[in-house]
Image 1 (cartoon, rainbow, N blue to C red):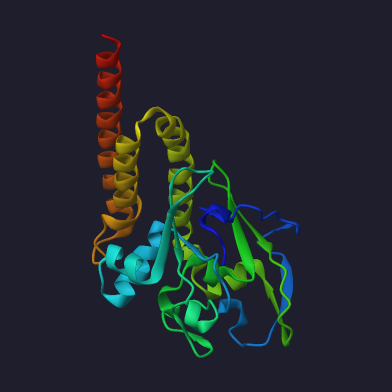
Image 2 (cartoon, helix red, strand yellow):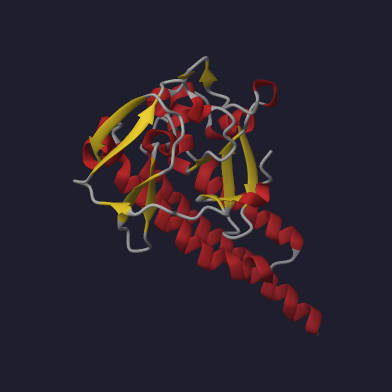
Length: 241
């Protein structure tokens, strides 16, 4: 069982890319047996807020309800931000909770990690998106495709703008939250974490567009973090008197 400390917003913290980045017009190949093996024993499927919103819409449930029912929550030791991953089902050999026989029960709202596989994505702070091939050992039929064609097959380009915004949001928040995490007393730190969960994952309506809600949440979050900062500063001043 993977420990929470082994995972952060980008998946496993000990992951190191060993394959080169691929140009979008570059061809790649991989073997696939169609067995659903890539969904079995997986404990590292980390969800973005957009992933959770899409699953919530698919299930017609509030995002927080979906997270409580199907996910495991933690705080990243590197990012200091909320981390949400699909909770493996112990009774099913730690398989994905949405794996039904050899098929995904939420295929039309599957997380980005799953849609990309066996490709993976890197997003720079400047918003540049790159892709690379992950090692696979499934065997089976060899599939060949150009990167751009494979991405289009799973509608990845349609969501790329949103994925970039999510990644940049998290990178910007890391710079804010890390020093604040060190400055706040434990009760205030817990309040900060609760507000981060709301802004990044839970304070969404699946019947409304995602990005406008995210932008509204970030404005709200900025004001809430400032309140916590001001309150901590007042407490510090009071102690010095």
